[in-house]
Structures are given as structure tokens and as C-alpha cells.
Image (tube, rainbow, N blue to C red):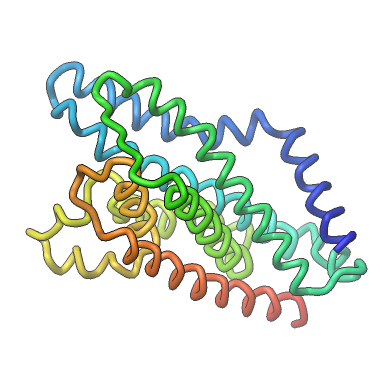
Length: 254
């Protein structure tokens, strides 16, 4: 436990040192989407003002997912790649499961920080047309916890599979499409007219992240029932973490 906490403290120190870079990476894209779709377009009458109520939960979910995936996948891929830093950690007095848990913990923490940064900025920009009605604070915290864990599990899986030089391609071909097709900028039920797509994207954890936040933050918007979103996120966490653990063990002891 002492070594586990020491590694957590070391990574937090690194995060604090590079916090400006981290915050910039996390905030810029959500800020642009919120500013354009939540302020500019409603302001010029190109979208209905109420669209911001659809947008906020999706932006929150996407920001957390991106932060957790990047915060886990990029360092892990680098450590398994050209730095070989993972070898030093494997030789430290810490078990492999604890080392994996440490990676997931840091990815989850970064996802939570992303939520804390993005939510107030989004609210500030869109507050004039935003109608938030949080149905349950305990349930909101449950979704924040689950989305953070899902993002870290996803990052663990990608970080142990993808070569560091291929990470940009991975984000362009896997992560970004998953976010755009994750009910981020529209409610899942609105896809009823495109039934095949509506059913296909149910394999995407982002759907349950966006719809889960939508069910709690803006429950007046049609959404998947919250308990189904919880089950979807739990299934995603188990599957992605399993892939990540298997990939970690394979890379560590191959």
C-alpha cells in the first residue's frame, strides 16, 4: 500500500507540474463546442436555444472520457514503448494488480478533474438558456464515478495494445468516432428514425455516459432510463478493464 500511494503521489506531482498543459488539452475542444453550439448558433438563431440542454450532459461525458483515456493510454503506451519505464515499476515492491490499479486510479482522477473544469465553464457560457434540474445528487456522483472508471479502463486497454507512435491514429479512428457516435450531441432516442444506428451504438460506453448524465442533469430531455445507463457503464468497465488487464500482463511478461 505504501508503494501504491507513493506512485500515486509521484503522478499527482507530475500532473500538478504540467497542470496548465493538462487543463488546456482538456478545456479547448469542449470550450469550442460549447461556445459555437451553445452560444453562437443559438445567438444567431441557427439552433433552438433549448439545444444547450441536450449539449451539456454530452459535453461533460465526452470531456471525462477523453481525459481518462488520454491520462491512462498515453503514459502507459509510452512506458511500454520507447522509455521502458514500466520495467522499473514492475521491479518495485508493488504487486502487478496494484500497479494496474494505480494506472486506473490516475486515469479516473484526471477524468474527475476534467468534469470539475468543464462543467462550470459550460454553465457560464450557456447559462442564459440552460435549465438544469439535478434529479439526484447521489446518482450524479455515481455517474461521475462510473464514467471516470470507464474512461480509465478504456485507456488501459488502448495503452497496452497501441504502439506509442500510432496513438494519434488511434484517437482519430477510434476515440473521436466513439465520442461523436455516443449520443454526445443528440439524445439516443432521437435516433429512432435511424434504427440500425440506434441499436449499433449501444455497444459504445459513451452512449451510457451521455445518457446517464442527461437523466440526472436535464431529466426533462428524453433519455435512456438511468438504471440501464448504470448497467451499460458497468458492463463497459468490466469488459474494457478485462481487455486492459490482459494486455498489460501480456506486455509485462512477454
